[in-house]
Length: 402
Image 1 (tube, rainbow, N blue to C red):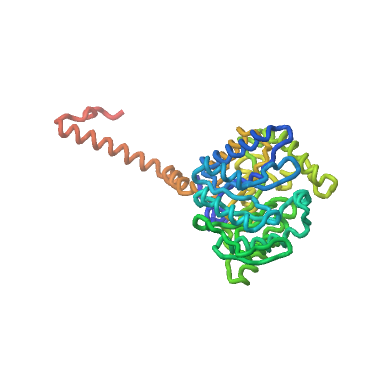
Image 2 (cartoon, one colour):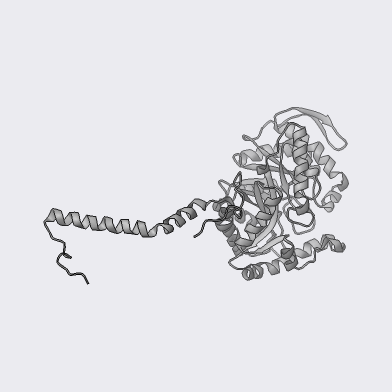
């Protein structure tokens, strides 16, 4: 095999890419909800066995599809079924909760997970969730900023007294502090507000629209803003703490992958049409083929997944974690197989895990004639020594040349 030309070889990563799963979760209206939640936990356990780095559970309260109201409860259940995988709140909708309650639940959960907890915070995505609480969703981002600062102070062991227009803390403190270090992440979609918060609080970034129209285009810009904000505060944002989320389903062939997800995609699409179907510019009713063509999703082979990751690396070369949305487009069997193929074939290709193996394979092939000849000579030498020690003659002696 010829060596790869240096100009065409992918840039070597500074840090290995990690893979995680982001489970909102999405469950159709005709499924048993108990079994649906159980399946999410089984998927987390399967991901743990594969060596997947992270598994995130969401918080939603309306709409019927995303039926996890408490990521903390899902993580507590998943912690007892897993051993190595980090478990994240993806995300706690901070404006819906009193800051002291959030801090205390996070501290306790970090112990129950033995330090495997990732604390993801966000403003809350669904306006209907805020409506049910009598909250104005237009204020959610400002309230996230207010409360997150207090939560992090509490988790650091401070006693906090402060009053805002929506919460009050009086000598508030966490009697139980987190188990070791705790990584904090904030959600980001299209605007730079998430990046600014990450810079302000030295947090990681969950980019939940990394390949969506507008989201992909904004990646480099928003990341640059976040880094500039961090530098102004005397900090450096490490791209290894940047998580980019997208839809990827792979199979042995593109046709097989399409067959496995087509029905589930159409069912899932109804949920988004129910929220924004009155706005034609959102494009939520586009066929799956259009999403694949635009690069918004991958439904294909491991090579297609590798190409998508390379696209994302053009925006942020050393982003740390690829988060795979679990939207239940496929059956449990097929989505487990897809995740397994990502871990078996995609991750090693991106991280160069087999580069030296390929070099060794190529080197051995290029020298096979010499190596085989040396092996043959060694065998002949052993036979000759045996005959000499036994006083035997070479049976080939006296034979005439053909």
